[in-house]
Length: 75
Image 1: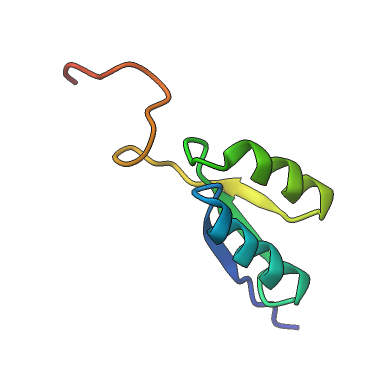
Image 2: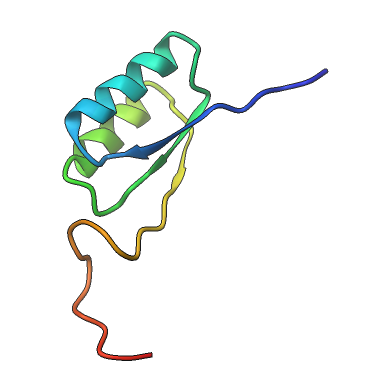
């Protein structure tokens, strides 16, 4: 049997994107999502994803959005 994974990226970035991902999951189009921890709607999206049993992975974001830590002065 062949399975197709359809992952929706950027959950938590904003409420409009989140709404589209949740609708696509409910309609059976999307099977999973990856979430931005520094997105503007992260907390609400995390609660909703749990409520509807949407499988969620992490989307690592090192260059855009709200920073979660202080600046890195060098490597």
